Image 1 (cartoon, rainbow, N blue to C red):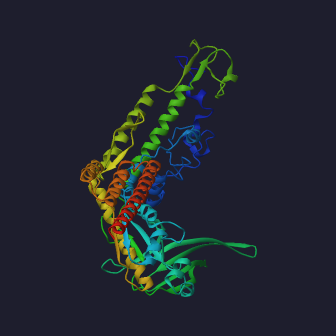
Image 2: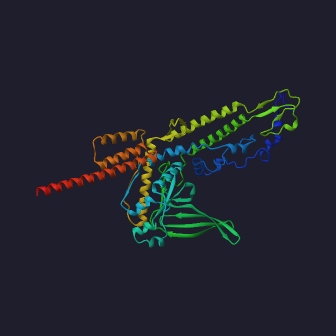
Image 3: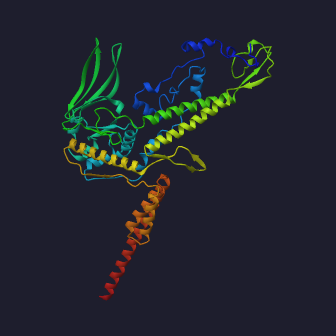
Length: 500
């Protein structure tokens, strides 16, 4: 059966159009795996948008439409272009590209700087991740813990403490890993409980799933899990102890939040931006699918019999023997895909506008002849705020470390504070002017190293090659000076001998 134009009717395209009245039973409508982002914890949603994980990876965040028959097919061919991560990275990465000066006279804290989590992670690497998450969530937590008292007691000297790693260590806890927290009337934190390890415990043929929690206050800590019996919750404490610091050993990063008080967690600054990126992900998926529908259109012909109505890669539609429509390919209207493309461009503009409000601007530049649409640069003030946050956080960690070992930690930390696009060029020009004044060799080496680090900071291999060459030249110059000094002393001794 066909309409007056000779084209197939809706009843020919869909075996039973009544499935639209009940999508859950329609054989052509399968929305399995769909995930509404509004039902996801806001911090989890931000992290997934940043990492491109979970429901972006399996395309479960793709919104279906009531009349969509090929949702699962669209999920299979869709992909996530991460335009969110570069925006967050632009607010943090430049602060860690330059040298961060960390100075202390405490050898235990020096060991902590090199390995802050007892797993080999440097403080520099740890802080870069922690600050980035603080930017992403507008809030983050760093917990400083220590080994058990008996382990610490076995190390009698500083060398033994370093060798046995009997030192305080840190780990990160994100806002979504906070089970609960208690604040006093002034908003000061009294206690905080984080999600900890998750274990499956077998007792005979029975397997219990235990979610552990770790609670901290200004004197004590405890590790516990909760058992639910007869509608009641029973807390089972597995471990507990006294840290005795007088403060909760948790550094709370609120520098990027609307308020430093956490009685109620602040709304994440970039949640709306993540929603826009989610919208772009959906629109680009529809564009991709429509492009395929346009490219691989359906052949429509007539007079070949009703058995040729099955749709597939090698099949076609038959319009019936009474159709006078000539054989042709049919596809969705190009106006539809044009509208989707226009909407994608509009969303891209809104994403850039939202980022600009946060102090991150798009940078139009070309690398190797390829224009990069999603390059971003944070404004200098934004980067200075990041650096100040890093310095304050590390100073707080030094205080906690000192409380654990019973000794004040002298610590001086300085992050980069000059982020002008021309700052490196200006500093290089200044260094070259100083070099023209023939400074001492030791100063010359430092100046050349500074020039090299600024010029080739994005090319580690080239930078190391230049550093090695400078070091070799310095060694050679030192040896030559030693030889000249030796020859001079020899000549002086010979002159003295002749004079005698």
